[in-house]
Length: 239
Image (tube, rainbow, N blue to C red; front, side, top):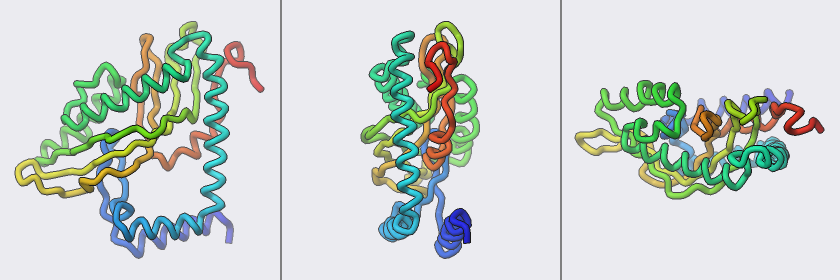
């Protein structure tokens, strides 16, 4: 049996044997599996982790190499535009992350509209927050702390000021996230406990500032890490 087929088989068996209750995970509306928040879920994840250890190690090193390369190239780009220097990037991404979560918890992304691209702001407000309001639901979503911000992929334009450039960041944060009924305050999905979550936030540099362009599930980190950075050779020479 091929390795890829074996991995798929393990995941399919896991989904069949367990009744998985989904919950909605804050900005981005990404679905995560509530079973993995329980004690038995964590035991299950540990068993799967042991089985898939070679794959986990492979993913770790691919991400490590991608992050190292991105930071090296950002060091060069930062000399052209200070908004691309790592210290400024890290500060801005953490600020945007916190602002968006506060606005999301208040059920109104307009509060963070200056930190989000117009399309993404409208999309998330209409698709998730406004729909939950119609169903009399509130998404409680709070951040206890941001553990790490790591650049995985760069897509740099040849604009003189690097306008339109995008960077994908792997962000790990301690988050509380659940849906509750507005009238009864009963939790209908999720958990009121804080837990670590990984998300990929894609930032776009537009009008001289960084804004949130998209949010992807953290499980896609390998795909981003394996993608070759797009950078004009006159900015960062091809190695």
